[in-house]
Length: 217
Length: 207
Image (cartoon, rainbow over all chains, first blue to last red):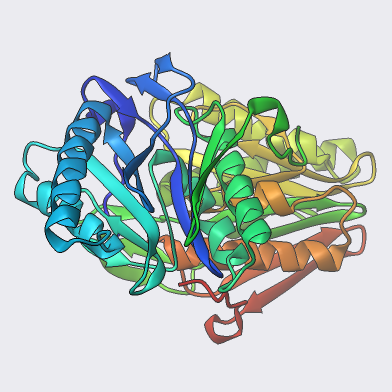
């Protein structure tokens, strides 16, 4: 369990954020909100896409300092494309997560970014990995992160079932993100989802007015 | 000396005819669990209870003072006091002494004028009525669960299940909450208290 990071501890533009990734039968869904803020006072971008494609079937999403996250993912993308040329095959999801982990662990004193990596590969199928702030790498059936994630631990613990269908999984991810965005003032905007399967990686956007509503709205 | 803090999870829900209140039972001094069977549901009057979070010393002192004032007021009035009055007394004290206090309190009960009511008086001294309210360090983890699972018009039984589940989820994630779940149902008939032991708590199949 990595320590909670408050938005005020991150200098500059931070993705006070909610991100998650969930494995389902045949693929993964990776999702995030779209808000970037400065110190929790000003929303510097309300439609930022935090889901970064590091290879054909591997995406990662970032939480923490936006500058750090962008620098690290750029480096990771380069290393992975080099790796896939060397190996003459698409990289494993674990390899992508490992690259991010090395960067986070080796530079832990300078960096303030945590990552979720999710994707599909031929060896193990759909997988979700989380790289915490200090550089710990863990594989899980689903994972949540970012400042808004604290509010939905109870919800995801109660609602997650292994082996969901694609639709159930998308609904689960959408609901969880909407609930977090409703309570965390540094998460918001629209919901970005990417559904990764053996065949393709599909980007779905749920705009603000189509977000699920709950009892007090 | 280690800082004595009741990291906690507390909750109260209104239903038609009364309220359900719940709390965990853990009190910690640093990493040591000083009391694993704490009772955080405190009677203020016959059909009015409060759930306490924050500094135990502060909340005990406030609760004692409000109990005294409310008892006196009820004798003067010659009838049971309203829940709103109790909530107001808490608010007065929490707001006036806001700089010295660290207290988050949920006041809930039943009176014949408005039925079951839940009022929350968080740190700072604001007071507002809510159909469902959560508090304490463990509450952050269950906002999503509570927001998505609460519906108006739940029955007494449904409220009990809902509260027990929400508290279990919070206790599983918050290191400062744990132990047993204490529940109290307050209605026209009186107060019905229950305890759900650790091994009887609802389980979830999460990773």
